Figure (cartoon, rainbow, N blue to C red):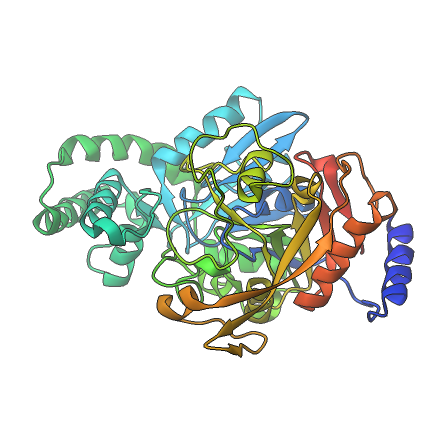
Length: 467
């Protein structure tokens, strides 16, 4: 299939007049491969990480925490991960939560329980960096209180405690690190002081001693998993082992490069791999940008290509193909947040966003997911440029202020749809000509080859287009 895919790629590139992609890296043979979100999250990174993991020794998370949502379908069984790396499904892989991850011990318990019920052994394959920071119940309380105070200016947080945890990390004196659990007496004293500091700021009731007892019991199970994560990942690299770095969220939610302040509290892009794991930049051989065939966003914030339909954001009724396109995408794509249960806002594919994320992250190739969601549409549109105050913005430029991003006008290209199911397609040649043309145009607009295409929920519904 790989040989046929390579021939097909060369043929279609020649037919379209596009340049042939001589080095299209799928991530199958890299020493270190990064799986990164190219939009606003929920692109399907977990599925690609799962597909690749069978060829890798280690899967490592480098940012975020239980605010993320990864769904993996294996033999019809759905696994919903928030905190844990997707590699736990593969019995040969080791899995690491790096120092950039915010570790929620409650989420750890909740997510490992289904693995045990399915007979998946994970205890000797999950490791946690001693430099990672802890999310506790009081962080979640504070997260909710902060969001309430913001009122109409609410960020749309998942209320999983990410913001308060990363704030404490930057403030240093109020931080709680995983390695501190090994020194219980000093941890307990510090925990009491940190809770009191937060209570003075936010005035909330809290059963500190009861929570400490609960954490102590959790620590007895967690401590055997705690390692020097920086040493572990670099020794693995030196020993010739292969590594997937699994990103949470996406570049447009990055603390520095996203639609600030409607972003997450961690570094979600290529730079986060280095700071969140301790791997040097020259060790990352390839990175794959994951993007949906359209665009979604959860919560508040700018969304230039958003589709607002006549029936708005109510329940998900029956839809009429070709009308109310945003509702169509939300319904067919089952666009409900894995972590929050909130409906995702939907819109056309934004190539400006993908060009920008490719510029920052340097993708070797792209994984387009959920192409099948577009099956019934007569026409599909792609946002190809932004204009502001009558001037077309140059490629790679993304307005940094909410005011400017809210005023951009999107220039669209319209392409014919394929109006047939692609769910059973298993190669490039199986795809309808119009679906092939859509993929080809994405490559041209982003300036990056497409190596993987998702046409359904299962592992088998991931088409590999190049080596």
